[in-house]
Image 1: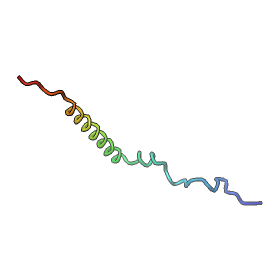
Image 2 (image 1 turned 180 degrees about the horizontal axis):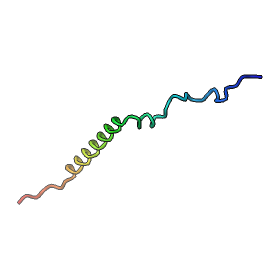
Image 3 (image 1 turned 90 degrees about the vertical axis):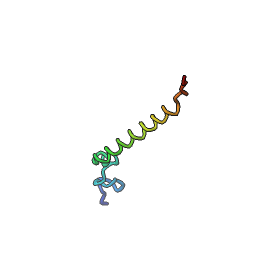
Image 4 (image 1 turned 45 degrees about the horizontal axis):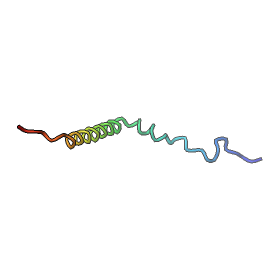
Length: 59
């Protein structure tokens, strides 16, 4: 008879959490990512609006 590991030899470590669970466990990192995304999107949107404005006709 042979001794076999019931969990299997190729199973991952039980102590290691998935990436998104580790990300969700850091609320200040999520806050910083949210602010950075909004900053980049609104800045890009504002630059796009300024660059695509039609030339004003002055009297």
